Image (cartoon, rainbow, N blue to C red):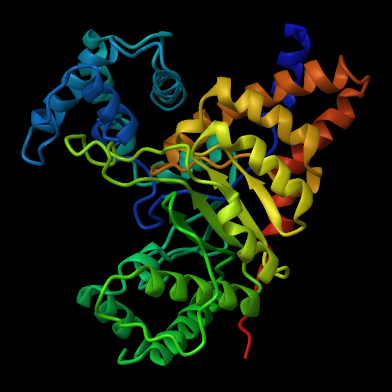
Length: 420
């Protein structure tokens, strides 16, 4: 059991490390919340409220936003035990000056009014960035994003490729790709040319990664020579072909490939928006062995949906030089899971091959409380296992923290330049 004084000292020092957030869903053109509704509209709160008994009614687009927030905060009292409620309290305290340690339904009007006052400020996003000590935010960009109108040094582009791999058979997706690249897509060769043009566009605008979320039953395989694959019909062969070409482009342009592995979409069909997706235990990194072997020059930053799969991720990161253990994604993003998973990663994986944390946030306000949650767990692990357990100095432990939270981001996701 770590000494609480030591944990607090470590946490205070770790909290001074600037934030480089290597995976978010923040929009650089509207990065900060504009109202309390933007905060409470985060899917964690809507899905937890729905799970605790709230109907879909308040989530309809024409429902009054202020009343929606009042209802959500009424249901918050049913899940104020969760870590997501802790994030909300920290946002309210840090950015709105909320004076209490728990939020109750009767605080709805105060919070709404205060958010209206401060979030309307023209420099609100800059204030959140400075207060949070954020140095860099990595984005999740649609493949047809023009990547204009924002600072790509701070808001770093990342090419998200789910639509290309799993929905290219849809006419609207092929039309988007044709408009983005200027290439008409009649044959597979045209798709390959379009993908190469996309990568050139993204890299020339400062992109540092390619990313995709993958279902449990997906198995990457190299294309069979001479295989006949239709563009206008969904098939595993088309998805695998596109995915393999993306990996080839990552190799050519020296971009890391973020793999978010194991999500089933639409499991809870009556769930709220973004509150329908779950995992099962049948997925395995064994399915990716051919990919990892075929592309030793590509860095694969692997995130898993289930903490139960962490032992496998540790082993693959231990053995494969090109496999990175990345963050604590979605349902694994709870302190109890993080502590176990982080501890075993630090015990088994070279420290240069760990992406400690990313927020997965949709608004800037969530970056700080999420990182602080991880920082607290990291301080506990370092105090317990490294300072008290191994006799490391506080300085050495803090350097390890900086390595996985800050230094590795620059090394694993280096700036790229277009290649011919």
